[in-house]
Length: 78
Image 1: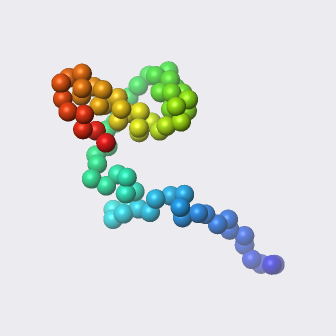
Image 2: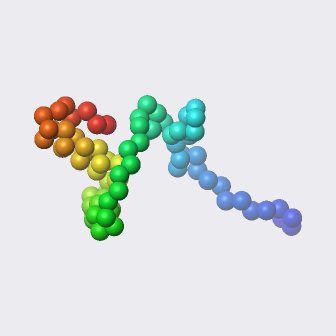
């Protein structure tokens, strides 16, 4: 054991394997949208995420589809 380094093993199931271009499969064919919120709004959004045991991604998809519906558009965000 002397001279050997101990490197923790990581589970390959923990991370999705990147596709071509280094993107995870969940992002293939999708575009990123960036917007800015006040810190308190971000905190509230994260709190909802934790309370509902969901992701910010899922909440933003839901919010986008609500906006589309209010504007008479198809709920197409995925």
